[in-house]
Length: 278
Image (cartoon, one colour):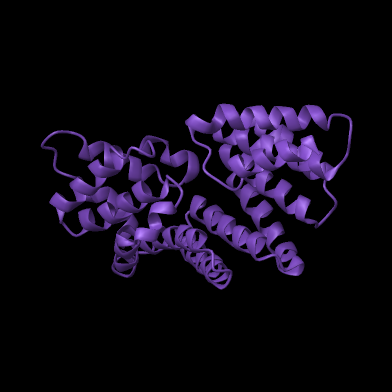
């Protein structure tokens, strides 16, 4: 049906892909059409359209609207179904955007056993990945690294290279926060050099550059650190100042990039030391 076509397009642009400012108007059009065509129903398409709407509101920093639509989607979804997993994903994102980190973690933890029972590798990888994100937000890099590693293993099993690299990047961030930058560095460098990574989400390359920049800053390799941070700031595919919209825990990476843009400024290793050191 037409409603389903709009709903699928909305999902593709919000949950399954990059929803930067250049595609948000199109995504909003599909969301509004799907909601209009399913108004008054309690269908799967309506439930998923509400979740897509919540994701879009989260991308656009419309926090309360995101929570409202996510809650309606959760209430409509059949318990512990694929629709429920999607609704709970939107709910976690909305809670995270509102700074309600403990509740976001709880939502992520509720998803994982359901995804395991359903046996859907995409949902299982996403549940593990979002758990990693939730643990990073509460500054528990050990648990974040564990769940990111599991998510990466699922993605590799499913031969989903883009998703494997995405979760490997989150795992590298967790490793750095655990003081294990030496383990993260070769993984990040390999991803930056991998031609296949050109197909990754637009946020990934600057995120990886800033992670590597932070490792280098911590050990005093200032020249390459500054070059990487400046390259991240000028990436044509993604405005790295919006990185925290996708990775809320990455405020320190934005601080690093801001320092690097100051002419002749020496990087401050203290911020990185808190992530990479003792």
